[in-house]
Structure formats: structure tokens, C-alpha cells
Image (tube, rainbow, N blue to C red; front, top):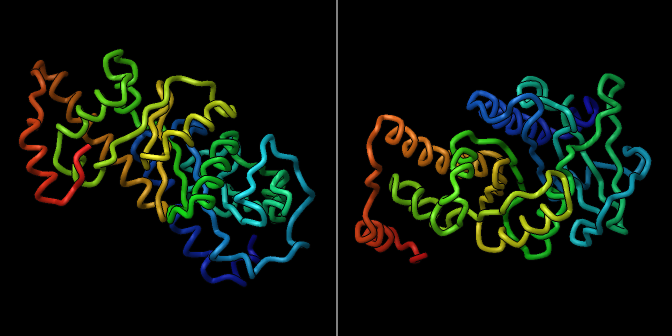
Length: 273
């Protein structure tokens, strides 16, 4: 990895961006122990700089991702902590090359200290999302998964385990949520972590949303870079935080009324959801 960095000046910037967002996730309290993971499709940025001999042996994947044939992805490692990714992103991430059959991947060889690192346990969801993004020619290249406290708390309240209700609540709390997340979030009922079922449900929800809330688990967000994906979750969690602040103080949450939200959407040229 050190040699790779020195030969690719852009890689230093990529790792700095990963580090910054990992630090934000940790400082927010959204990344307990080894919670959360990040992936970035680097194909357009580094593909020409890598040779076949730079990668280790092929490892089989559980599913076929034809859109990722010959693609290069950076992913955080399984068991790694976001506070460690923050301090040393090179040591706590893997760079994968998906082979031409799109059924196997190989890991970029690294210095001995971190040579045994493997990709995040949520790799099936990350691969499925990147496969969809490439296949549908979407611009987003980054996937961030984290555990935002207030959004998770909402999914422990039965009435908000409903996509329409939770979005109407979050939009009503602050104008920024309505403006920057007019598409709202997609809601996925509880499914086992790391499974193909969770990946499939997430892909379906991402057809009309950029942020997905996994019930009693956490969020997935996509963006053109790590900051953009982080910002989307941050805005949503701020709305949930204000909601709980009012409730904990003993007040009913009034929220911005429907007419005012409609006026806001018209003023900013936002389609009506």
C-alpha cells in the first residue's frame, strides 16, 4: 500500500477523505466498536495504475455482480474500528479488484502489518449497491453504512416503522431536510445483517432514495464522495434529534405544517413527494 500511495498521488487524497468521514462517524457516536463501513468505487481514479501482479489470490463471492467486472473498490476491513480508520485509513482498508467473471475478487497486496485484512462483513450489500450504481449509470461512487443514534431510536417506535410516516416527520422538523432530502429515506424492515436478503431489499429501496434506514440497525447512504453520503445521514439524524429533544422536554412536536412545506418545495423547485 505504501508503494501504491507514492505512485498514485490521488490515492493520498482518497485516503484523507475516507479518514475524515470515519473520524466524523466516530466522533458522532455512530460507530461503536467495529460498527459501520465505507466503500468507494475507485475504477475511474486508479485502474490504469494497477497490474494483475499487484493483487493476491482470487476469492469467491456469494453472488454475481456483472456491473463490477474488472472494477476496483476500496472497502473498510472486517473488524476494523472507525476510530482506527480515522487514524490510519491505509492500514484499515482493502482495495479489491473484481475479476472479469464478476464472481471473484482479489485483494491488493499490502505491507505485512495489515496483509491479512479482509473486507467488511457487509460486503454483499456494498457490492450489490455498487453493481446497481454502475449498471444504471448513476453518479454516486461511495457507500457509507453507520449507526446514527436518533434514526435507529425512531425504528424502535412502531408508528415510525413506516416509510411515509417517518419521512413526513423528518421533513417537518427543519427546512434543510425537506430541501436537501426531498426524496426522503427508504425504510427496510428488520433483516439479518450481512445477508443477500438485506442487500436485495436495500437495492430495491435505493431506486428512489439515496439514504436507506435499516430497522433497528442503521443507515446506508450513497454519494459522489464520502462527505456527500455523510451529509445526508447527518441532516436526517439532526431532524430526529430535534424531535427527541422536544419529546424529552415534555412538549408535543408541532413541526412545519403541510402548507408551509409545500410553499418551501415550490420556492426551491422541489418536486412534491
